[in-house]
Amino acid sequence: MTNSAALDYAKKLISCQSITPATGSVFDALENMLTPLGFAVERFIAGEGDSDPDNGAPVENLFAVRGNGGRHFAFAGHLDVVPPGEGWESDPFAPEIRGDLLYGRGAVDMKGSIASFVAALHEIPEDAGTISLIITGDEEGPAVYGTRALIDHMQARDSIPEFCLVGEPTSVNKLGDMMKVGRRGSVNMWITVNGTQGHVAYPHLADNPVSKLVTILSEIEAVSLDDGTDWFQASNIEITDLTVGNPAHNVIPAKAEARLSIRFNDQHSGESLSIMKREIVEKHGGQLKPVISGEPFLTPPGEFSAAISQAVKDVTGIEPEASTSGGTSDARFLSKICPVVEFGLCNATMHKLDEAVAVDDLDRLADIYQRVMMRVLTASK
Image (tube, rainbow, N blue to C red; front, side):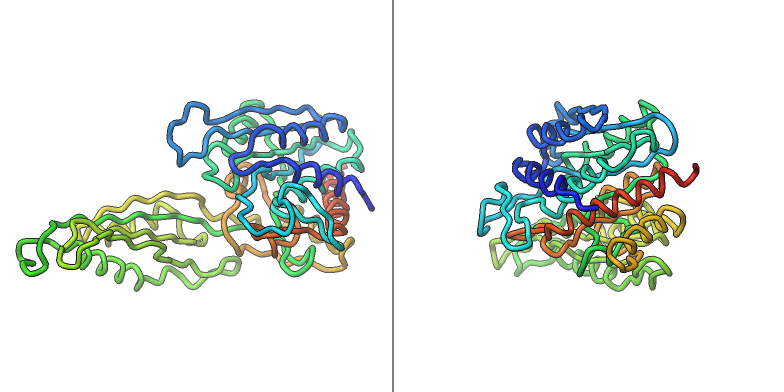
């Protein structure tokens, strides 16, 4: 299937400035694409009135659905993008084709995938089954009022899909070489150790929190969580910040802080890891504040992954590797309601200056998405 609509749609979406959290014009553009294809489009704002700036509110979300029978296939994605930064060769929000590439912020992460999916819908008969799009304006940010709010919205209207394809850029070296069938979990931990400030020449009159924090971190670093599994790489603990903020060379500080980030496989949970680390921290007089941003999930090999693999092979001639590598995505939320697989464009330039997608890949991805939908929707007929 050659479909110039994919390129046209990608240009329209990239043209909308939608730095996270995204609202407004980029959702207008997507709604205008979907309405002529027979979709009922529902948009809502989540997080209004939230005074916590860390929550990234307010966020706009879109749920679009066509059909009310047969199998229910969903596509999930996000219209928000990370800030472009300085140094682009061209305006990051003015899509430009140079050679075989389309340049613009969001070209691969992930306005290009959304454009390809919408283009693929042109080839899907309206009576093939139920199709929905789960699109948020907050994936690159805190993700508090994005996909989680959309899931609540879908559950309230009793519209839960049987399969969900997330259009994250999963391909590595060429389109189709990798799909994600799971992800490790993620938990961040803030450690605080309070002491008593004093003069370094009179340590008996003070209580140095830095020494305690060093001991805590040393014990945590010595822990080997696991050796990995058949599907997941080993869990890892990384110290990502260490702060004392002491401007004086002759003062024992009153407080020392550190931050950890743990990526973990399905041998653990965010809660079990929090309990494990809290025991170490509190043993030395510190306090621990964990924030779990996602639990691990796996969609075992089966009908859905097989449909994607076959569609990729039909279009590209290669069979995608089923992987659980990489960071988190909104699939961590969607996996709680249905089987989820991630598949999309090449990720080499995502979040970088001069982000770009091969124009041909937009059309080929549309072809893959169309084949996946038809295979899944008509499998029971």
